[in-house]
Image 1: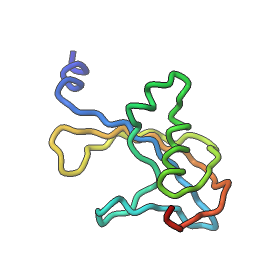
Image 2: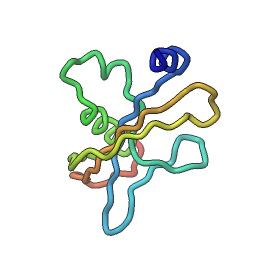
Image 3: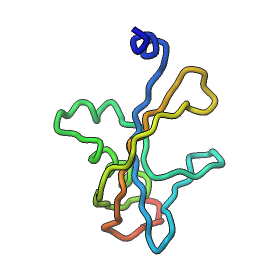
Length: 111
């Protein structure tokens, strides 16, 4: 009962992301026009659910390609987290991250 009340009174966003550590440094991405940096990744989109074979890993790889034009290889899943979305009253984000490694060079040129 408590779970149903929580779910009906909250907005839930599922986000899939990756953590890349190279030479003791973490790969981060600036979050839009905001002033903070974040791990690569983003919201699992409606079209991710349209394909029954789509996985959170595939959504994660798609985000890496879209945001930074890199290919990745998933190493292992990390502990999922649930955090309240900043600036909202009833929106929570379920963060599902993976430890990954780059399999292509970083291309910072705009296409």
